[in-house]
Image (cartoon, rainbow, N blue to C red; front, side, top):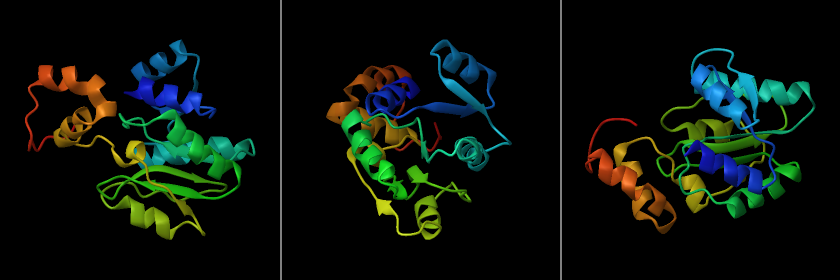
Length: 174
């Protein structure tokens, strides 16, 4: 899934970087020739902050985009790129109230977790809110995976769902 998100990001002409502390993720990213930014500490908030700090040190605008977006399409990201390049802050909610993409020009206090969209929205000045099929559907539960596989863009997930034994209504996180 990360590779599909990465491909869409590159097709939309973003410069991707992978923020991680995991050795296996670092090795994967390096085999693809990607920039790897080490995490400053545990958790998604810390990882996002490390990515922002790296961009700010270089005078670049930043965008945090999560890799668990199985339905993301390059044209959706190209539309986001236009907004970001115009200098606007941007935020994209997930269908469950989380945040799947956020972009800005300066430091930011991330607050991921349930309901993060509203926390993040309150911290941005005059942001552009964007929604699309690809940004609304992230994977946090087995039901999210089943739902994505049922969408025409998610047909590539069908074999994974069928072979996994995942049942609708399962309470396990993925």
